[in-house]
Picture (cartoon, helix red, strand yellow):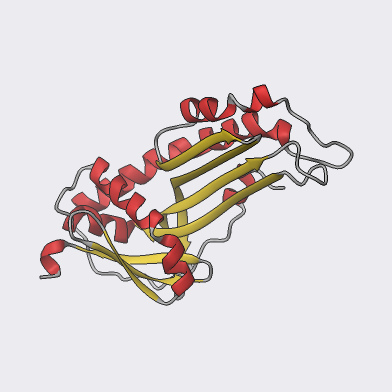
Length: 225
């Protein structure tokens, strides 16, 4: 099993054609600031993930058998301890002798253009999920861990959301990132181009590239009329 830190840092940058239309510097600055906030939470998240879950990860010659009473406390510890910055959606439960945690997070990353030798600062949306069922058979089969990027958008696309959105504050932008992440599963299954609507009437626009949804831009509600 790979750790959350390894899963993120070792993940290849997705390739996507990037438009070069000029976005006002004000909105590029807002996008850059939000990405910096998300990135500052990433290392803390990865370190705390290991603190909480490394002890439960099977390894050669060792299959952990944690007590149920201990596992029952983990959802609350996770919910209260992990950074709230970047959290888009969280489910954390202990039921029927099984621990299940699934978190959708916005994180800092980079993307590489098809025709560039350089890269663009970006935000990714990633799923972090873990299941621990100590009594599963055969022993050790009850530990499952997933760290998967499901969407990515460069600074240009994120800045378009600030520029064109009806509400331009960070809370509203993060809400719209959550809408993007929540809609990823059907868009990935369908493939090709996607248009994902958000609360203010705007849409994220892009296409599936490899196993990611790559956002090209954001179209505001007034541009759709």
